[in-house]
Image (cartoon, rainbow, N blue to C red):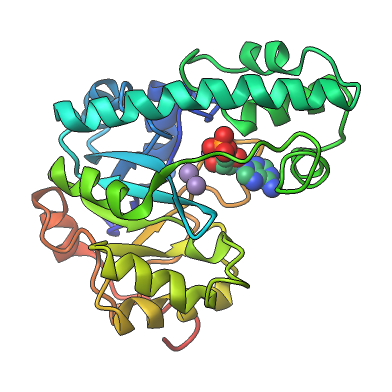
Length: 297
Ligand code: AMP
Ligand code: MN
Ligand code: MN
Ligand code: MN
């Protein structure tokens, strides 16, 4: 065991393309020792993921990635080691999924205005979970139907603020999201902090500070959305605001993910891992070898 941890991944219960058994088998084959399933706004895959992880002798914690907002920015918060049976959490997630569907219909109407018909209907065909229709499903549909050449192009041309297929959405406030996760016994982790446009909100420092002030537990330091130089930057911010550090490749699909399971470096020993006191991580903590991030941090 090398102590390889990945705490951010998606299955077909949200916008991943693999079934839960396929996802867990892939993670195991890539040498992951501790895994979390973190589907968007959905925990229906957790029981199966836990069972599948066990068949591969991987340690598992229940997770979720909740769509949230702060200062007008759409922010993702990963909840880790949650009680997926918490009635309050389940109710919160069900409410979010209802508003997601409303947004998806509105997005279809926006595409129709610019002459692209039946986009909602097309996106739904890509969403195995009818309650969870994401921009990712819109993007896959628009690529496969020839409107755009890549998912990146769909986002750039249509699905960003100010673009014709974008619908501004009111997600749950950041502080409430953190409370919902903590109320379900989990730890709240700011997902891919380098991915938000914080130009007008005090830069990354302002967001990470707000997250810490609102009761957040940790931030993703090593993740696929971050350039290697950002590992050091977010490592420093995690120490500055006494937040624990997390790691995850945000897996969605073997064909879409830039970083494969197990390819991210181990967390710097100078950081406090979000899993440092989890029973699931006990063996791993003993076994993990120190590995520098490649840059001082
Ligand atoms: P939603 O939760 O419906 O707003 O969709 C957000 C999802 O879109 C994220 O979780 C990513 O999986 C995906 N996404 C966001 N930006 C991009 C991009 N530029 N290229 C591909 N996928 C993206
Ligand atoms: Mn996603
Ligand atoms: Mn995300
Ligand atoms: Mn994600």
